[in-house]
Amino acid sequence: MADAGAFLSALAAELERSPLEDKRLQANRARAAGLAEAVGKVRGQLDMALQNTASPMHSAQVPAACQRFFGDDTVHVFDGGNATVWASFFSEINRPDTLLSTFKFGMLGAGVSQALAGQIAKPDSKVVCIIGDGAMGFHFQELETALRNELPVIYLVICDKQWGMVKLTQSIALGMLRPAIQTDQQGTINADFEEIQFDKVAEAMGCHGERVADPAELEAALQRCVDSGKPSVIHVDVDPNMHLFAPGLQEFKAMHQEPGA
Image (cartoon, rainbow, N blue to C red; front, side):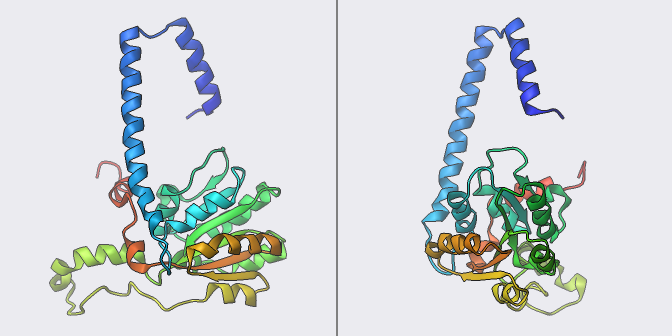
């Protein structure tokens, strides 16, 4: 672990003292060009999702709208399962200390309070939290904390009314396991839940609330949140089926494996 600036400065100084052979330098440049080309192809495939402008919206539209609306000094908080994956693939973090999440720890709901901490640490910056509806349900009462302490955090709650990662896993795995767990229940088990109108709950707590299903209306809703000067919640209706199939889920699963598994 090291400060990136200090490491690169030390590396540059060492390369000046001991420059690479031209053959190795050319090989490195070719490898870097190949990686850049591969990244470009993946990026192009991912961005095809943004062509979907249907309502309820594609989950990718949420971080994409935040990317357009907010500046580089904005503090981003990602929380949830698939919500975090979508946010990670469609956000560009260009400055240090502007991304908070639980990363490999895997718990849900921490982002609600992480956003408050981010606003306290950077009072002159905007703080936006992209969070799943399941994760938001754990610690919604912290909106009162935000209001009492005048922390104008903006929460975008991606609402698909299901435990997305759990539901997808059950859909694939339950078939062969039904005899072992002694159930005849078809479909998934306790992976869906009733709607919570997060915008209305926010308003009942004295905060600002919005509800958006059309991606074309999302940036205007963000502007109203900023203008309110209050802690704000945008209830974002997303397509529940498309939300299930977040990109890079195999890599996400591998990242959370126990060492040596």
